[in-house]
Image (cartoon, rainbow, N blue to C red; front, side, top):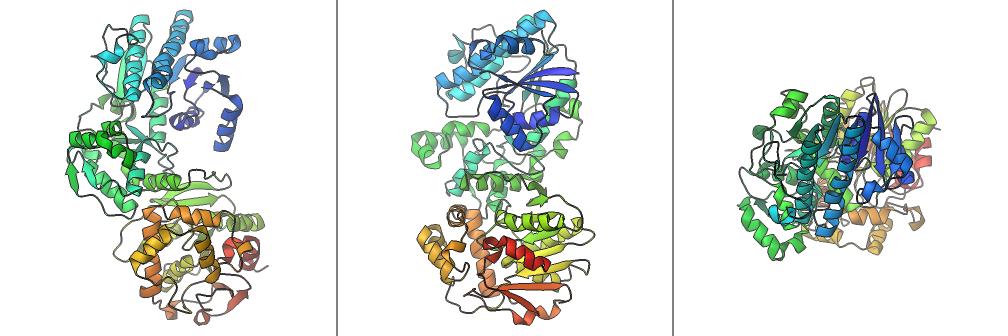
Length: 613
């Protein structure tokens, strides 16, 4: 069994690394500022292990890391040090960055020296960004990084400069003392390949934020320039494999993909733009000119520091060593482009709702690039499709009710372009949503109970008409919007609609919701709902998708209901809807005394109606 001392264990990379390390025969000492907060973090993540994980309170910036005598003894017993500490803050001052990175490197290197002298340190692993100028050949520089480093390294940004000087210092110490050192250089790190969830918004999130505000009209650098990316779960798996090695020297592992696997920045921005349902930039601007523009004041508008462009590069990197560890095809298998649209949508969602709390009842996964929220259970799943002015999370209370009453699994997708799911261009807009039906029905081989609310019901009607769902499936339609009462609401020119939504106040939204019968009264509107809808329209992805789908329903949708079988069809209708009429052409209907959004306002009652209780 190896004993590991880990810094940065509660961070974006560190949490994923701990999860991977716990699959091995290890004991982990994690340097944390607060044991109680760290315990809460890992309990919320669902992989807190009291036997294998031990929190040690301290601080990278303090001498001896601020450890108690008892905790020092624990650290001095470790076999491997993994140093991944230090918050990503590209706008940190020289004093802040020096305290965290340079002083932190000094303090942890002192422990490495003492461990090696006491028992022999098996390995020191340092995680530092791929743009570090130091490698195994050019790091034999005899300078005092604390006295001469800032002049030696001609990098203006304090965050980058001190991180790279810390890299040099750690290399110097390993060489002088003689313990093995593995330096791992990841590119920009994004969320897990299984979810796309990217909690660290300070990296790629800066670019997404600029696109959200329509402030990225050009391509920085142009052809040949790249923004290399890696998933945090791929990085964590790589670090675990390095832990298992028995090195005897200093080695550098650069985790930048081969150039053919790494799209140019124009292609990357094209994928981002499609995911955000926006027009892609077409004009390339030299990187030097872009930095000059940023320094002249554009940074304040775009909120991207000029130094943020330093991560865009046309350099060539050697990745032979990582391939020897993981296999020649590792970069192909772990390519972020396989799920990159989901990363973009997740960052967009986080920027919309910065205070959104994670729901611990539902687990999140990806099918393609569509986000699926799941509760595990026994039997056929309930699959819930939400409507407009909504996303999958709005149906969580209904999903929980169905699960608690039946014990069956619940799957709730965020429909493409809404919630946390990216948009994707299709020739026929409805096909984008029918593809989700096909993908989910393939996962539910024994059939499912499909429930569609509003536009979600339209998707299921289309799927039935096209015979995508066979008799193994049962379908419940909640408020299918197929027969309009009047044509005045929401039927203004597209630009007016767009600005009306972007500029909507809480009171105007409330009037719209009550006036159109989405809710029967003000008390029925969930407390979070109006603020959430208003925030959602700060996203071009959700705003543009909502307008496109509304136009589809208002002008283009003419469903052929003659092809819809009624045998397994259950329709529930809220009679307080003032915009749509009861769809009597679909068959027998159960009428309830609620508004159009009754699955959101009355989840308990809705679950009972769905189950026939």
